[in-house]
Image (cartoon, rainbow, N blue to C red; front, top):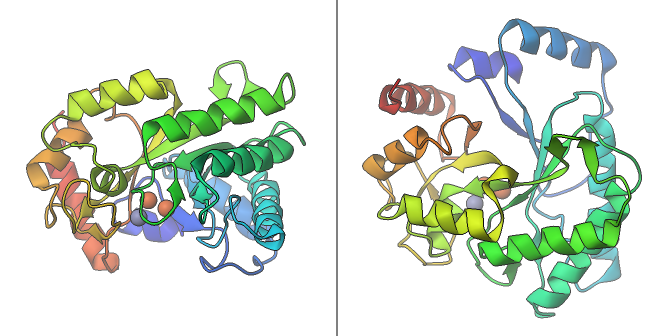
Amino acid sequence: MAQTAVSIGANVFQFFTRNPRGGAAKPIDKADVAAFLDYAAANGIGPILAHAPYTLNAAGAEPRVREFAEEVMADDLERLEHTPGAMYNFHPGSHVGQGAEEGINLISGMLSRILSKKPYKTTVLLETMSGKGSEVGRDFAEIRAIIDATESKLGNQAIKQSDNQTILGVCLDTCHVWDGGYDIADDLDGVLAEFDRAVGLGRLKAIHFNDSMNALGAHKDRHERIGKGRIGLDALARVVNHPKLRDLPFYLETPCDLQGYRDEIALIKKLRKG
Ligand code: FE
Ligand code: FE
Ligand code: ZN
C-alpha cells in the first residue's frame, strides 16, 4: 500500500482494516509491518488512516450488531498497535429509529469500554456524516455530544495517549458536511468557526477530501471527483489552502482508478499555494 501511495505522488493513505462489508482481518505479517515502517520513514509517509468496515454500527438496535462493532473496533486497534501513530476512522453509526440520543449513548458506551482498556497508540476519529437515513454525527453538535459522553463515561481512565495528544478526534469529510448542509463553498470560514465552537479545531485530525454529486444539504452521500461535483474546484482549492486546514493530512475518497488518483493528486498540488 505504501509503495502504491508513493507511486501516485501521495504521502499519506487510507485503507480498510478488513473487508469493508465486515468479516475477519488477515493475520498480521510481522515482516511486512517492519518493511512498511522502514519504507514509510524513508519515503516521508505521514499518518496512515485505517477505516473501519461500513458494517460497524455501535448504535444498532440488535445486541449482536453492537457486539460485532465492539469486537471489530477493539481488534482493529489492537492490530494498529503495530504501526504507532496511525489514526482510525469510523462512522459513528445509525440509530435505526432509536433516536439520536440513544445512538449517542450506545456509541459513547462502546468507545468508553474500548478506550479504558489501555492507552492505545492510535487516535480514534469520528467521521462527520451527511445525515442520510438515521446516521448519528449528522452535525457538529452530535459529534461533540459523542465526545463529551465518551469522556464523561471514561472519567479519569486512559483518555490521553500523552499530554499533547487526545485519543478522540474528528475526520471532516468535505462531501459529507456539504451534503449535511454546511456551505463550505460559499462560507468556509463560517463553517470552520462553527466547528471550532461546537467541537474545537484542536480535535480536527484529518480531511476526507471529496467533491459531491449532490446539492448542499441533500443528506445523500455520493462522492464525486475533485472539481467535477457540486462543491467545485474553486471551493476545494480554498479548502486545501485554508490556514486552519492546510497542514492536516488529506485523504481522497473519490470514484477513481489508480491513474485517476495520480491525476487528482497532481491537480491538488497545483491548486496548493506555497
Ligand atoms: Fe467513511
Ligand atoms: Fe469519508
Ligand atoms: Zn461518504
